[in-house]
Length: 129
Image 1 (cartoon, helix red, strand yellow):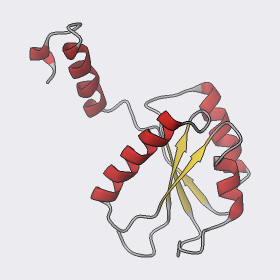
Image 2: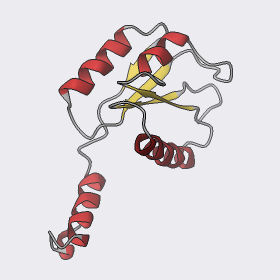
Image 3: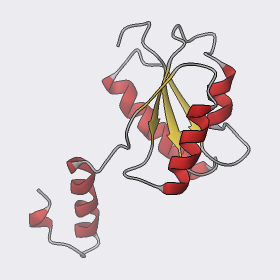
């Protein structure tokens, strides 16, 4: 990614907790491998800590050259509660925001889910692909 690319902001449903932080770390690491120069931020849609709406109202961090934020919801599909919180955070942003669609459904997510079901002997492994 170019050095002046906008920061990628992962919108996480729910409140900040250890499991969510670990998931964000895994996703951020994967994104960093694909986009080595990306500035990655995370904002939670609920709770009192590291909220997305506060992040989008604070303006760009000093180390971020771009004023626009690309917000990516960490959701595989529509979720009325999370979608409403996301829309509210984007509407209240003081920086330009590009909000993307949900991550899925995506064939890789479906394949991973089927593989986990096969691991639990709830689906045939031969049908994973």
